[in-house]
Image (cartoon, rainbow, N blue to C red; front, side, top):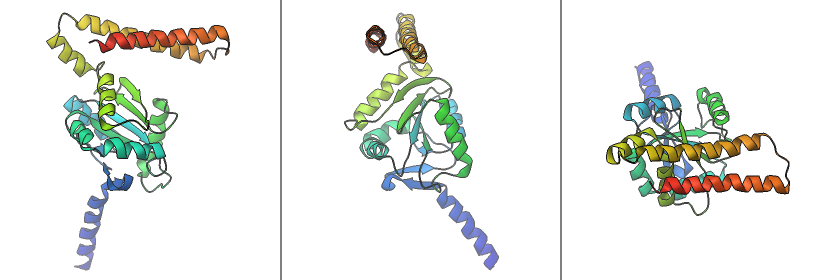
Length: 231
C-alpha cells in the first residue's frame, strides 16, 4: 500500500508541476501542451495549436527572473485583464525563457530556446515575435517600453497582424476591390525593410553620405507604413 501511495503522490506532483508560476504569480506558464490565450513553454504544441485554430503566435523571449523590462511588461501588459481577454480569443502564446534559475525551464527546452533565439535574431530581452499561424511567417517584432500598456500593446499586435494570412482572407472577403492594393502595400513595406537590412549588412562607413542614405531608407519605411495604415 505504501508503494501505491507513493506512485499516486508522484503522479499528482507531476501534474502540479506541469504548470509553474512566474512573475510573482501574475502569469501562469504551462510546461506541456498549448491552449489559446495561455502561456506555454511547449513550442511544438503551440505550433500545432496555431495551425489547428488558424490563430497567430506571440513568442515571448524573456529572462523571467532577472530582466527588469520583462517584469515590467508582465506587470503592465500580460497580467492585465484587457490583454488576457484579447489573447483568450486571438493568440497562441509561447514563453521562451532564459532565466538565471535553471530549474525554471525543463532541460529539454534549453537548447531549443537558444536555437530559436538565433533563428529569430533576438539580441535582447524582452523581444516579442509575432508569427502567422503557419509558424514560419514573421509578421512583426515588438519590444518593451515604460509607457507600454495592454491597450497600446494590443494595438501593436493588431498592426503586425495586418499582413497575416487570416487577416488577408478576411479583408479579401470584405473588400475584394482593394485586396490587391493591400498586398502591394505589404510587399512595398517588406521590400523597403529588406533594402535597409541588406544595406546595413554591407557595414557602410559612418559618413555624411551614408547617413543620408540611412535617413532615406527609414523615410521609405515610414511612407510604406503610413500607406499600409490606411487599409
